[in-house]
Image (cartoon, rainbow, N blue to C red; front, side, top):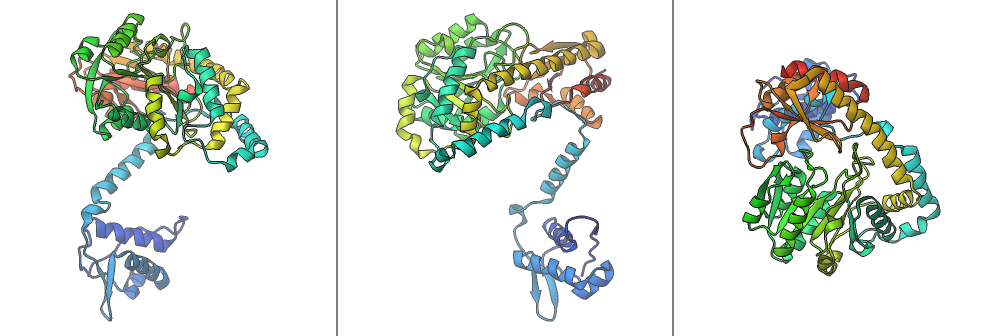
Length: 467
């Protein structure tokens, strides 16, 4: 019979029997208690832990019900035999604990996927939601349009025409709960026309790559040059589909030149191919005017345009959109009723009203003002504390920038040492397909969620790590 020594805490909100149940369960899963091993009796455990018999009975009963224990009349309780490779193993428990530890350690987060509270007015958003719930609630009794609510699609068309030069009509707009959902639909359409390879910027957006990989596409990495993707590599591939972010390449920040855009459009036209233009964060340009979309140059209908509201609003409002060229929309219409709409109808209608009354563009102007200040503060802090030991890239737009660091440390060494200093940061290798030995580590500094008052302190601390 084994000894059980759980660390029970009566001050926690979690009942003692639940704490005991979880402890014994984890000991069985981790094979610290082996199969058929006998556990202490309820009386013995009550005495050794100085807790009530009822507490132990409740814990043992839950373990019996779930099959972690079995009992033999007049003999006691024993650990059950089962295949532990199909449940949370010691390794998974360790990984989970490590992840939680990282979250607790982080003071300066340069790898953030959240926004500061000051950057979104939830009181204003609540008023628009309430207007739908109070005055347009009749619309909510009907099921959501599988393609997205017409009111929102119409407002999107007006907005992208004004801001990005995109030519479209509402019938070609598809709304979904995030870009990945839309790319999943697109990958199905591509398979129907026998396209099962996709050329991707390298480095590039992992979440997009993952969708195509999941749908059994061959992924062809295309290197990034100073003016965009390497068209020579693309032309030598067999791909008829290419994913790009030309206005602010992720993560390098490279802007594709007009010459490269036109050559890429010609490639698509001559090869009967398609270009997926991810125009994420296109509104957030800090120097000069926003760069026109590639779709605005497209005369042959080869560009599939992607946009999202999640970054410029808040991540919890999962509304993205895809604009298909005319020659693909009929193919989509043939099978669109197989899908369900993944975005709240209430939020779609509220956003449509928000845009119609000019509040979205007003929000973008305020957001741009706030992020411009953070962008400039970060650049100045890098110059002050790192000087000529770094080169800054991708700082003209978007919500992150790169620093190429002249240091003896590797990218991974900096990331690990930064975490020890309560800084969470990522490197460019996280987004590459073809792994290369870099002369200097390249770090990605996202400033979307980091507090403006922490930027200088974070860079100063990072500088001490690198040099």
